[in-house]
Length: 145
Image (tube, rainbow, N blue to C red):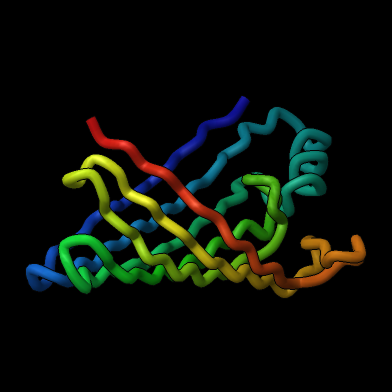
């Protein structure tokens, strides 16, 4: 027995013909309906509260160097201290990207380099030891039709 609420804001603005700025913010909360003291104690022990919450924000920008190449950056902050979204911590990340548009705008290659940090050690380093940061490189292939 619980209710769940989520508030989400996604917005963006083309500041100049070459520069785009975006924002995504979210806040969620559960409210557990307890019938007796045991339920309240069990939920509070599990989530730290009978109304645990989580939230985050992402700010991102992209600058079009040309019609083919852009450069972008994204900063994200996510807080879930009560394990509602299974994290149990705070995570901050910074992502740098360079989208490459090909095939008359039908294909976008998007390499990304991302660094995540947290006050808690829930990442693994190359030896399998716990660490509070990680860096990753990825590539997206986006086809528009």
